[in-house]
Length: 230
Length: 230
DNA sequence: ACTAGCATACTACCATACAAGTCAAGCGGT
DNA sequence: ACCGCTTGACTTGTATGGTAGTATGCTAGT
Image (cartoon, rainbow over all chains, first blue to last red; front, top):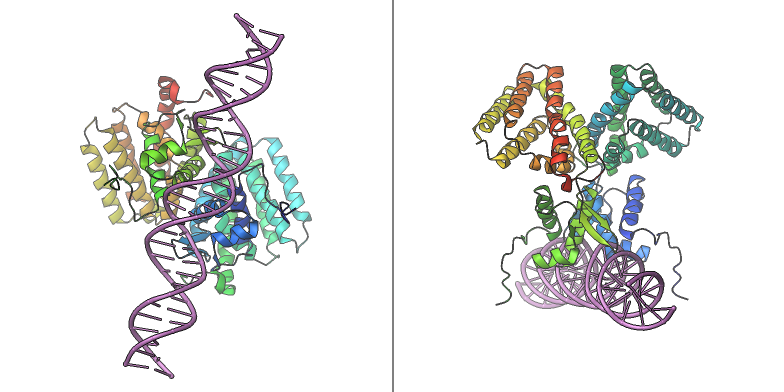
């Protein structure tokens, strides 16, 4: 009866490596695996009752995303958040989404405007303290923009890159400014509905620059999570 | 004396997996591994006198880039070029580089302008038939733009994405339009030197849209390399 | 007490063995 | 002659063994 493992969170339908990758990625973003922490293939493998090989493949992908740093024959460490890399990622994201929203505003179908307004309504209903719920809806909003432009691939690039931003957003505690973010969403959709390409673009760019305001403060409050390089 | 392998192209200093990845990537871009061709871990491993494991890691990364498609328990195939995915990649690249060139034009230091003009001069000296040499210089030109903006990370994203475009460029035969590309480079640098942000941006965007003109023709000429979906 | 050097217990990387699924060819029955 | 099943040679995915390199702590010598 030893065949039955206690809690098998892994699906047999999909390869194990990508599943491990997603699990660890989520844990790093949510700071369950803390920046600077050392992890090892064998340790993770044992805790999931699998072999080291799929874990290794997950490590490789995480390192390409800059979430861990693997030092051969020395160890693998969860990277500390660096303000520089957050700004690097943010730059790329802004560039891509700017072109996406330009396209959406240029086409501005009634259907997408309605869908976006529906989402904003749902965002307003989120209770002040449920930050995770808002982050999910925010993610959905931006994803919907990309989908409306038919830019699924562009969104996949953003997704593969934005983890560094998500780590910071998870740490950002102030529930107050959720309201401001929703306002900005509204301004974006208004510009889209009006077909004002330029206005939509600038509205989105200011929206995505919001993180720059809170970033220094967060870095100061959680120095142990950030690397020394100011 | 059997220890001495015939031609060991792999370095011992670096992990083997990434080296295999780069080798295969180059071979796919240059159509030495032809679209639709079937490759296997064991086959590549044997030809390089290594084990399957590093080859597997290379396959995974190539599949993330869309250069191969791995079907579990069935086989791994070099993807055919799809015009849709080329256009997807091109959209992302244009978005990122547009913001890069805006920043460069906004700062427009004399030093970077001189460096870019030097490169254009070198581009003009490339003999008409040496397409590979021009592609390398073109790559360097765009890379230099990113470096001038201090956007090394943004460039790394472009690099990890542009392989699909490079495959097409390798097939594009007409040496005539090399001259036109150089002209476009000059217009970009002129706008940068003048500090004209908007002009620099549109010049770069038209430059990167050049591939759209030749793409349908190439797809028609080399139908065996492209997938059926028009 | 203190330091140099060595043994040991890690690490990630590579190679090899095993498992599970796919596909095609060939044989046997109808 | 033709169709269906079986068998075997593939494929990728996973597990495990072995290797080289690093860091740490203990021991021995001063």
